[in-house]
Image (cartoon, rainbow, N blue to C red; front, side, top):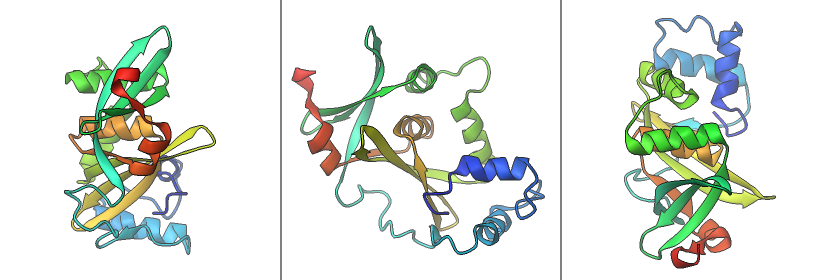
Length: 194
């Protein structure tokens, strides 16, 4: 599925009765993937045998592994992505709901009712899909751009995502988080200067 078609839109299509996405009850991931493939027509590749990802256990080329830290204060809420070797942090300011989800997930706790990321995880789990990694790719016009990568049975799926959502999902699924070197150079701040 190309980055231009967010999963939420596909889920909305299924919920609203899009004929190519129904019935989902009892359908396996392969059946759903084929229906999505037909529904999207000629929008281009996005689901593939290797997704062009190579070895998914290591950082993609041009990316570094980071550690997420959550901070709240008079400034609002932020997730800080720390690159341990250089001690450079990419600060991303986020809304309260995403901050709550990230803080709970970092602490290994759950809210009394499922939050949006919990709902997405339940859906992902029911389809037998594994989260592979989250990426923070770029800063475009003051907006951070991210990607999430999922897999099932040797098939890889990349989805465009807000970094706050990608980070929350990665933390909840114990998946690695990567930041592009270019973004680290562009928006990174030395830890001692923060």
